[in-house]
Length: 347
Image 1: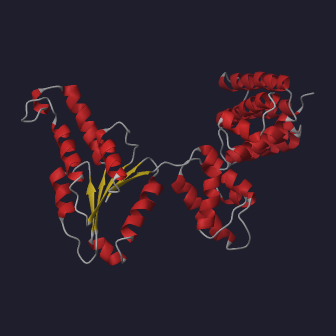
Image 2: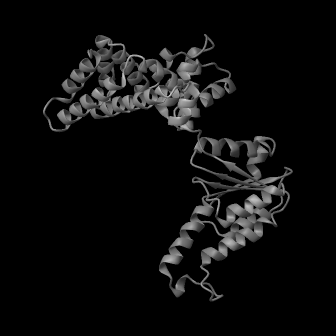
Image 3: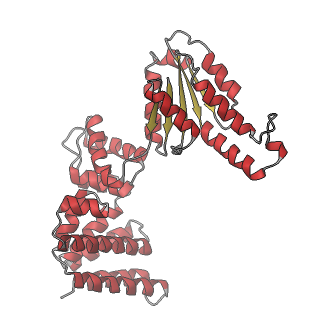
């Protein structure tokens, strides 16, 4: 069986390889029947040699080749750029040695022994128009291969991934806490998984993971706190907004980063307000602006505190604060304090 594991998410690639190894049998026997090859250094002859070896004490053997397709692609591109005789093979038809190696790989895939699982592992997405991808796809249709995309969910789908992952680990996380964790860390599934382990251990079965737990233990929750700060601004609660701002500064957030995140949040408010004026609901708005339904709902609630005219004026104030900081007219912490106070005191 041929497996093409391709995509940037290391956790998904790693877990699929673990599943392939577990299918071989007992760990100590699986280790004897697994070969790891670095595709940047190995030759097609070496790949073929290891795949042709009969399994020992297991029904199947596993050969894992990492980065082979990317290496072939780089060699092909380099050969085309050079365009000299040294890059040609003995056929004299302009085919590079990388082309020959790729053709050898494609020919061998159809001959792979039934007792061997060959995992081609690529840290980047393999283009669908690449000949190797097309050949693996053809073999997949015949039930002899499987293409495994290894890419994290889009940001809007990450909270659902966190909820499912927590259940798989035997824990429970509140939806708002899942949103905070997902939006603060982003599409790094390995880091999300690690933080979930820490949070589940911290709760030790004493109820679900809460927002307070995430903010206490996860050092990546500044964006969620910015959401709360903008919420306080929308409610014209200046003291709370300034307190949240100072907590963010105390936690090490750079002033220009904070300003950029405030600008981002107001941009979301403008988009949501515009969609609401068209009479659209939460799901329609979320789809239209590419945002998860949970923050979309929060933004819709915040928009009730703002008229479009207010949001336009807020943009002018944001620009003024940006210029004041970058030109040195005001110290950055003072400029942010004044900005948050002014936004909270609109009439």
